[in-house]
Length: 287
Image (cartoon, rainbow, N blue to C red; front, side, top):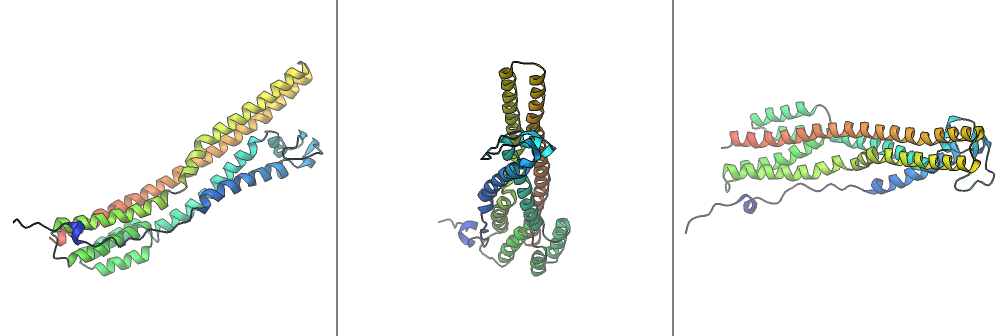
């Protein structure tokens, strides 16, 4: 019978990469807390009775104050959509801070490009332990993937069962598995920023339309005239606060989303380069 070559999957032990434990609490707690905070700001700060000439003494969930004295109280007149817009603004701030801290940790210490060059230098000199030491110093996502690949790289040097192509394949598989664990952590919660980018303006327009409906309904009830036209103009200006608020929130969300995706793309490129470095180094030095 013809002798069969051992395969990489049969002769190489399971990956040493361990799944990262991460909490999803912020993903569902933050939106609820932000919307509640948005309502509190709208109700008790923007809707402070002292900021209106004709406050609603009954209060309640949505007091019907009239004749605002300040710009903040005029925003209150935009209606119940304003708390949602405030909540989305707070979500943009919260998730921007959370993503900043996560991406900052993923970038590690120092330049990723310099780190890869140092690892390449150690690999060229067949000094695997020094390359692993560089990963411990860098401590970013690229270093985590590189470290996982280097461990398999070190194992393959002394492996006598597999040929060079199978060893390279084993290293590549280890890098891919480590990458699959790092990328979800980098992209987590970006969906909130991308959603607010598109939905924020739509919700703002909904608030504007609702405000204009109320204004025109009041105009019809009063039968026109100078006083009614004045009230209509005031009502429309108050409704347009929703549009301004929503556009500003969406613009901020779009800017932060693009900032973080750009940084994540740079990290992803570094991860791809690290995998290429390992496979090419092994293929050229350990034929």
